[in-house]
Length: 313
Ligand code: FRU
Picture 1 (cartoon, rainbow, N blue to C red):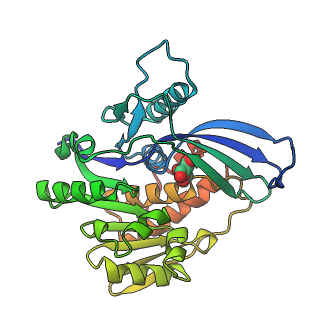
Picture 2 (tube, rainbow, N blue to C red):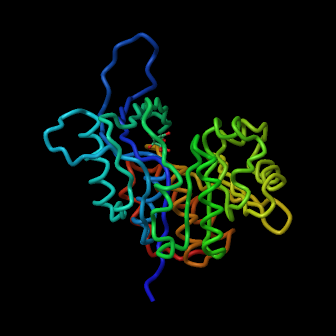
């Protein structure tokens, strides 16, 4: 029997990554060390990490149609770059939804070479979000894991999760809660009530007034009692809720932090990869931390492939 795949649903964009020797001061003019044009977006980054680790994965998101070869606009060139990067990394993209716009979501990112911090300025304009039909055109039985990046269309996510569970209640559904807009729109997080696994970012947890990862997983468990909850907290590592309480997993120290852009997405890729292969929640969170530590030690994502074949636990 063919092994079932994972699908990641959410954003693909282009990241214009400016590597600076220190963080710029407002209203100054400075040279930067290098400029990289990368494929980005949480769900796209997580898909790439999953594929580099050895998990078969598809990405579902919206991209502009790139079939008109005469169109030389920036958005179309950026979309071609992003799609070819996904393909090059072994991510299936046959289910992306094409739209007729010449814009493409773009982040201008400052990576501070002094400490690896990333500061993101994201432009989306009126680029469309996925609809229920775009997501459910997939042949659901090819996949045994759906991962959603929560975006403003959380009513769409909520309906899709219900349909996925109706089709096969054994399909795993995970949802990433990262953007604080999602919380403001639905503070009781009811759109995620059918998920099996929920990832909470430090930014999201801090917005909910939680002071650390353990407090965050315990608080979110109160709102979403059927899901396993995981929260990341930068160099403090991550926590997960299991057997009635929160557990802390410490991060290992990384000698030189080079580039933290996409560290959270890499953590999620690591956790899903391990759980999809049957590892326990605790071992999967520990593996997610190791993948994130590997990611931040160098630029981009390709070096994360070194971790494929690593045993869990
Ligand atoms: C990193 C990232 C970037 C993208 C931004 C979108 O997590 O996905 O690749 O530009 O966040 O918010």
